[in-house]
Every structure is written in C-alpha cells, then in structure tokens.
Image (cartoon, protein in one colour):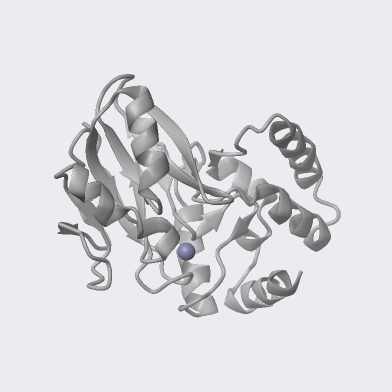
Length: 237
Ligand SMILES: [Zn+2]
C-alpha cells in the first residue's frame, strides 16, 4: 500500500491511499480540489473514493468540485452540513472503501468538532484534526472531557499504528511539549529530528502511536482536568 501526502493551503496534508502505484486512489479530507486534481493527473490515476473526518472547510471544500469530475462514494460523519457524503458512518462501523481491500473501523473522536470521526485500519490511522504529532486539535465545539476521551481511544490503538494527521504542526507542538515537559528526552530528540526533516521540506508525518505516547503531552494528562489545563495553556502559548 502507498500513502502519499498532497499539500494544501499553508500546512494541510490531504492523504492519498493506493493499494499499489498506478491504482486509483482513496483521498482523505480534500479541503481543496486543485492540488488533488493536479496530483491525480501527475500520477495518472483515477479517484476511487473519499473519506471525510469532520466538517471544517479546509477538509471538505474540495469535495463537491471533485464529485463533478468523479462519481465516487464518500464516507464521512452523519452531519447534514457536509454536502456530498453518500455513506454516513458512525462509531464501530466497518467498511471497505471503494479502491482498497482494506477494512476501516470508524472511531468517533469528538472534541475538535462534535462530528469528528477517525478512520482506523490495521496499522494505519487517519485522525484529521483530533490527534497531531506532539499535540491535539483545538476545542472548537466539544468539551475537554470529550476531546480527552477521544485521545484516550486513539492512544489505546496498537503502538505500531501509523498516525496520519491533517496538518504539519509538529515543530510548533514540540516547542510546547518541551515547555510542558522540560525533562522529556524523547521530546528533545524529536525536535532535532523534525528540524532536520523540515529543513529538507519533508513531512514530519506519519507519526505512530508509540512515538506519540513518548512525546505528546496531551496523552500524558491523567484526567480531563489536567488535559483542560494543558489545552488552555497551549491555546495561549
Ligand atoms: Zn478542523
């Protein structure tokens, strides 16, 4: 399987999943159709299906324009505000997206937004704006206990699970992690590694659950109150 980042806006990643090179791609969170169409053209591949994690415009604005070019199934949350979802899915649903022979399980992860879902298949996770490397999404709609519980669910996935987040926020998140946990050697090591990747314009993603358990201060909160305090601090950091 191939998973490629398609860059959009300042720091979004739209992920493209293919069973093999040259095969039709499953696109995750097309916030902008232009880089997706460009990527499909460059790779000379078709679009197979689309996954949507939540309603924010930078994850959905390319959806209807893509559907004008390709008549494909779209899997996403039960949210009537998102036009174009043909297959609404919810917690525990299992489905095999068109184009892949890979079964995904839906994990509801509210907190950043109330409709946020994540897609998990063996050893891969697409978690939108819920979990970032060394950080997590802001609480735009949900409460601290909701986002805390959502992150707990993701933290309990197998440690080898590759984590495909939707933004390149890792360096800034690590700066906060270093302030929150000044004695965390894994954070310092990650800062050096990420600086090197970014210097060469390489994505810092995917991460994996083992790495996040080591470097992500939000996964170290022992309860929702501790989590809320960290999140408030980070909002002003
Ligand atoms: Zn968002």
